Length: 300
Length: 262
Ligand SMILES: Nc1ncnc2c1ncn2[C@@H]1O[C@H](COP(=O)(O)OP(=O)(O)O)[C@@H](O)[C@H]1O
Ligand SMILES: [Mg+2]
Image 1 (cartoon, each protein chain N blue to C red):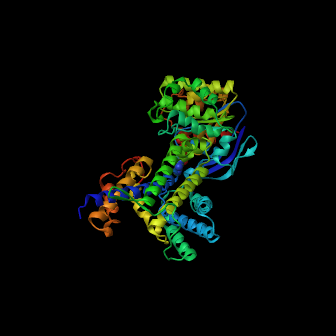
Image 2: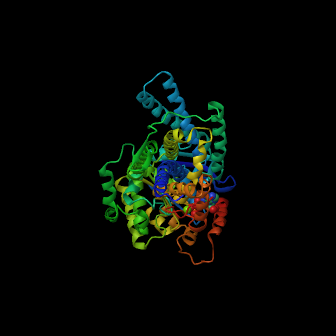
Image 3: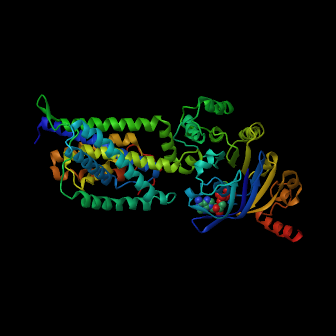
């Protein structure tokens, strides 16, 4: 039971999933900051993104394309389709209710989970599928420590994209527009900022980063219409991080990833999914604004 | 410049905040809307700038023309880009952004992208902002926040500037400064100004024409010199009269009498 090598390996696995959680959490935070809507359907968006990738890559493989061509075409195609999905959700489900309390919109995102899961079961069948992994499934050994190369590379990609998006958010003019809109929508509009454009961009960023997370996760976890379940771990990440804080999400993602991994190590895999909720419960009781969240947030 | 005709506005579909309001703002002038709390002054500005939709408010009747074109169906950001700026009540600076980022946000009002020069003009006009440009705007004093709000509005080179109670919560010295700048902008840049005030003395000192509002309606209007001589206005708004127990509500009696006489 207490094997140090095994413990270290599990810790590393936990940190690797933390990287992916951070990428997923980023999407939730972006939408929350801009629109004050907690997108419960983010997991489902990730799942759809993974199916887009599956479809594009299978088509290319069936034409006998070499690996590099499969990636070169199916990755951008997946990102564009996911961006369109985000635009459609924002424009037709969210925007008509702009200016009202976010609660009905949050309910819509919950309804959207069933819609997207149902649609994907119809189109792609509920059977488990394995999209072409971006990275080889090899295991490397550092001494007697086994490192899953696919998870390592996925972690690196997730963190790089997370950092790029965060830097844009903090440094660029568009980042200022998004943050201004997050603080006060009507005043942002009075600065000449296209507020619905900002909403749209936030959904697009969320859906595209989400689809990347789906592409990274699905070869490891297998792809079924319920891949969106990971969205549930990310709820705890985002709440722990403080809902609207990007740094908070990054720290929280590693904490939750590690704690989950430790739980399955010491308590067994069936407890892995429960532990984050116990943590969330404790946060809501003792630190309701999360680690780094803004204090005036109106809680659900 | 701006023409508002017979405007009716509701909040949440039930609360009527404006009841048939009409006024006109000629090019290059300073026009004031005067009235007590809750009269509907801010609502009028929100309607003109098309941000009512953010507050669950709605124009149900009437017309607003900006430079001869109806503003209906134009989003607030488009109106701003076409030369209308609005400094809101309470300044509404982005308190978690830095001073400079507040100006960057405001530079979306410019058609082209902002140049260094555009920011420098604002910092020239409001010197104290320059030394604090990297600080989070929430830490500025009330006067500095008003300067920032003002600077943001000016960055887009507006033709029409809407100002909602710029004197609110400021020290008298600061109020003097702000109003000096208002009249300077009006004279030097030929910017038309619609000023909302509760402070009648300020409104009378700086504007050309005044509309007085009560409970969602315009009750009195006129040139400054003419209104200054009006005994009711003196009594109710300029604090000249001696019947201090009379309230603003009595203006209704004035209106009735005015109708009766005319
Ligand atoms: N967002 C809102 N929702 C509901 N009622 C509002 C809202 N804003 C203003 N009102 C109401 O509309 C009326 C006019 O308010 P306002 O335009 O803010 O007046 P003023 O600026 O002259 O003080 C008031 O009775 C006020 O309570
Ligand atoms: Mg007001």
